[in-house]
Length: 284
Ligand SMILES: NC(=O)c1ccc[n+]([C@@H]2O[C@H](COP(=O)([O-])OP(=O)(O)OC[C@H]3O[C@@H](n4cnc5c(N)ncnc54)[C@H](OP(=O)(O)O)[C@@H]3O)[C@@H](O)[C@H]2O)c1
Image (cartoon, rainbow, N blue to C red):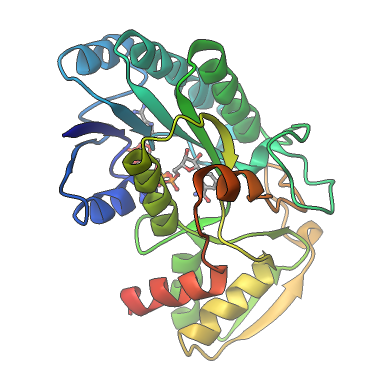
């Protein structure tokens, strides 16, 4: 039986994996929260791997507060870079394949066509920079890895844009949402399904891959779809990024080209609005 360690298991993606894992009883998942396994503790990471025979490690642990990272570089670097290096080393020493999750924020968003895995990176934020540096640590250490760059994750779990909109929709009659940042909303449960598909296929087509749901949207479009699908009556005003300043700069365009994943791994990708419909039906 394949034994799989999941780090950061109580975050959004980790919780989606916990749910999806129930459909895959032939894989033995070991879910570790940040309390059970702090990935910044090198000794704990080392002994977690040495005492078990993991075929895969799925790293869902990350420092994900994009704005706070601007003033907290040290902590973001500790989790997103240094700890990722320790994980990669532990994987190498124990013949474990690493599946790591990265972000569209490694790009500067100045493109107008979807980003491929070979496109030049240029993160605008501390968060994006640390996530890119984490990718590099894995590539320098390991041969058997999958780095999945994804974007705009939402689900029934943890904090995310969909849940914030649903809450605001029940509290307010009018809302302003940014309309000049374009990306692809991605259901974290779809990403969890893809990760399990990779494990089940036991593919050796290692490398960096892009995964998001199909289609593109602005945050304004995303908000409209959330309110539409949840039958929420609210006035939504489209605003530019300049009207909603944040500490971290975000890419204006971060659509990911997923051709490599579809071709190499034969994965089918749902349209973002279809997945959003599924998520909203479950949250109601
Ligand atoms: N959310 C998005 O829109 C988005 C977009 C693109 C890429 N991503 C990437 O997707 C991945 C999953 O994101 P997510 O939305 O699931 O994030 P999340 O909900 O913030 O979950 C991150 C998890 O990491 C854990 N963690 C933090 N520091 C840790 C440590 N030192 N040791 C062990 N666990 C630790 C957190 O635990 P505590 O809460 O206990 O600290 C939390 O459970 C991340 O790599 C993220 O960079 C996310």
